[in-house]
Image (cartoon, rainbow, N blue to C red):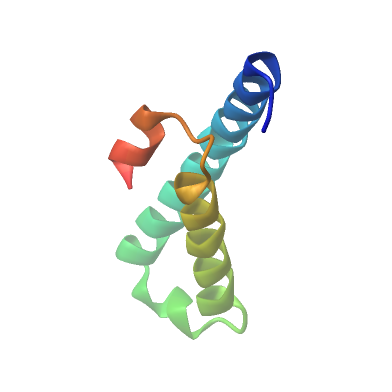
Length: 72
């Protein structure tokens, strides 16, 4: 079991990773909505899938803040 200090540190790290990840995902989603042809790009679907998986991992982590879990 992590100490309270360590658990808070992990929670902050998860939050700090999630913020730019959400911006990247949202930006790519907007691009996809405005330019549906991007889904035909070689690595587009794989990239979007990988981003979704990473977001899922962060949101489901036991030390993810309750606020982050509410967004999933």
